[in-house]
Image (cartoon, rainbow, N blue to C red; front, side, top):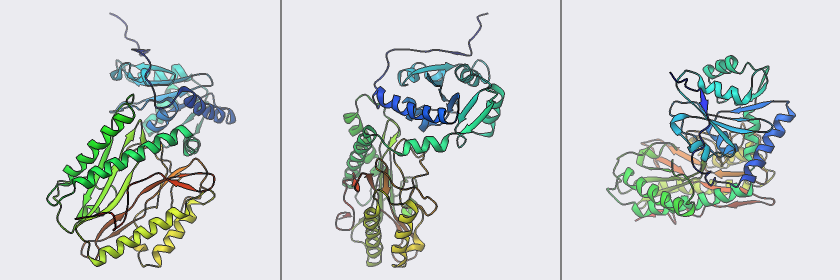
Length: 402
């Protein structure tokens, strides 16, 4: 009987064109290896989708299987499942090793083959389960372990010019989706029908702009009436009625990079109470954008907008922070939590950071002006100020659909 291997190399076809040139990945890996040298780490075992995509270019599809990227002073090797065949190798900067499922824990045997055993390792503690931690102790037998999740996040928070170019393109794609959604809004149309119009328009635009990319994960949340009360409420089959408050949310995904456009609209003229809340939220949005500049601190920005809303007796209707970082992230992976506009984040804005301004007010059903009001723009922090890369218009003068 032929012995089945625990892992093997599957270099099928030619290397694909990745989202960034090789020098970009080499520079990112150099930053990670500086961290390894600073803390005397022999290897780093990355397991999250966002960090593997950031350092190696490969965005995995887990489907219940573990994945990794092992970085040593000389190598960068993705560890992937056999079900993916040669795609991880084609889409990885560096090498790739494929593990088999003939025996349990072949994944960890492949990791140990690259990383070694009994050494000093860096791990993403915010991504490891208790079970994975036990496997690490069993198969890698670390002499010392260190959590590198915060340090890698700090590196990802400052975008390269190439990343900013990709994010800028994503913002333009989001605007295309917004235009398609606005054109599809009509009385009697369902949320799902309108959402599909926006999604289809964005996927076509992404394919036109990035013909060498993989296409997945682009989505729309189009909400109406009471369904606007939460920022992440899923789409329903509710039919639009005249007088509805609407929330347009487009999310193009380009090679793991997320961008967003979020706008409040009304189908027909809003009543006086709704208009007053909408205008106040737009004013908070504009005030907040004026605060985003190098040297500003996240918590201080949040507190200033709090004061702005409190003066208008609206602060009690705020439901979450005022903005967050952009880069390799999605609604099911990634988050640069160190760069969010909240009262508990003291990060200082620096050139190269990309951040949103997105105030939201939610008034409960049965109250005058009920609904969720949200505007969202993406800003790139520069040397002197911030550049707004979102083009879709906001406010009552633009987004009342007759």
